[in-house]
Image 1 (tube, rainbow, N blue to C red):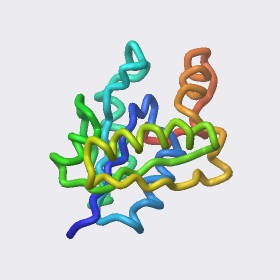
Image 2 (cartoon, one colour):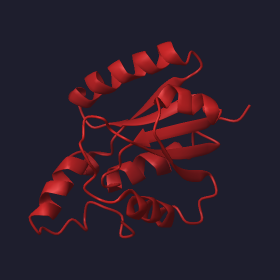
Image 3 (cartoon, rainbow, N blue to C red):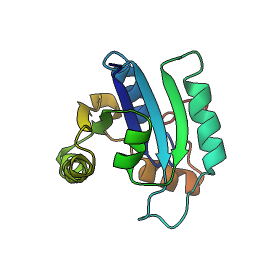
Length: 151
């Protein structure tokens, strides 16, 4: 049985923290599907989804175990359709854990075969968040040290 993991998120933008979680996850899974979903808590994306896809695909060019897809349904059901039994998530702090734990519990109740695997963010990347990067970018700041060069 293949170990397929979803790495879901809005990735607006995809950060070096996200990249780190995927690269570390490659040693655990046969395939990682970076799943760009619609976040109903956000009215609209800051960066266009097409540009996000291109940037992530370029970041993982040459990684045959990584796919990038867009979806607009419950993550638990999307995982079933792609035969993914794992959901990969990164945790920066205890606030992330509280939020991710709740999501994990609901996903597990909707899809009994979906197990969430948490990786602790590398310390040097723990301060990076997409919302902070959007704010820095919005006001003309240089975000290049926080995102892969392809993004």
